Image (cartoon, rainbow, N blue to C red; front, side):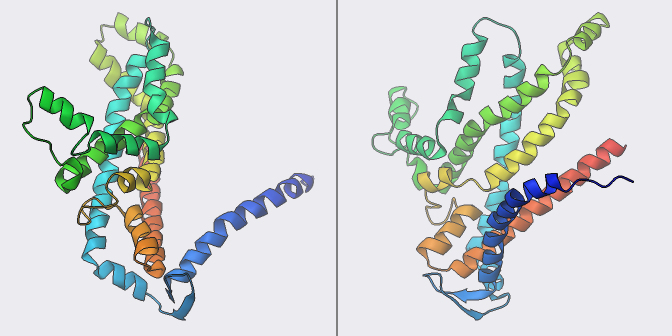
Length: 290
C-alpha cells in the first residue's frame, strides 16, 4: 500500500488550527460562564453549576420568549418558502423585463437588515409614518394606529418584514435549482396531457425538493438568530411582547447585567438548532431510504 503524502495535511494545518481556535474559544468561554456567577462587567466568580439554567427556565419571560421564537422561525421560514417558490417559477420564465424583475426581487437583499428595520420603523411611526398617512387618506382608518406599541400588531409586522428580507436569498437558491431542470421533461409531460398543476406537483416540486431542503435549513439558522429587525423596531417591547431568544439574550447581557444567564440562553439556542438540524437531516434520510 502506498503511503499518503503528508504535505497536503501540513499545508491546511495552520488554517485548520486557526479556524478551530476561532470557533472553540468563544464556545468554551460561554460554557464556562454559564456554570459560574459572572458580574455585569464580565468578572467570573464562584462556580454555580446549573443555577443559571434553573434561573432562566424559572423566568416566565424566557418561556414565553422561547415559544415566540419558535412561532417567529416557523412563520418567517414557512412564509418565505411559500412566497419564494411561485416567485422563482415566474422569474425563471423567459419574458420581457425578466432582468429588471429579478433585480427588483433582489433589492431587499442589498440593504442591511438594520437599515431595513429603521426604514420600516419610520414607516409605521404613529405620528408621521407613511403607513398611517396613506391609510387615512384612503379612508381606511380615522385615526393613526399605534403599530409598534401593541405586541399584537408589532410582532406580525416584524414577521412580515422577516419574510420580505428572506425572500431574495431563497429565490436565488430556487432559481439555481430550476435552471438545472431540463426542459425536455416538461415537453414530454405536455405531450402526455399534463396540465400546469400536474407538472408542478409531479415534476417541479420533486426536482426542487433538495433545494427547498437547503433553503429551509439555512433560513432556520439565519432567522432563528436574526437580531436587527426586532431589536431596531421594538427592542423586544412593549412589555417584553416581541422578544425572541436572541434579543432576550442581548438584554440579559448588556442591559440587565446578567452575562451568566445570557450564556445559558445562548447554549439553549445552540442545542435547539443542533436538535432541529439533526432531526431534519434524519427525516430527509428516511425519505430517501423509502
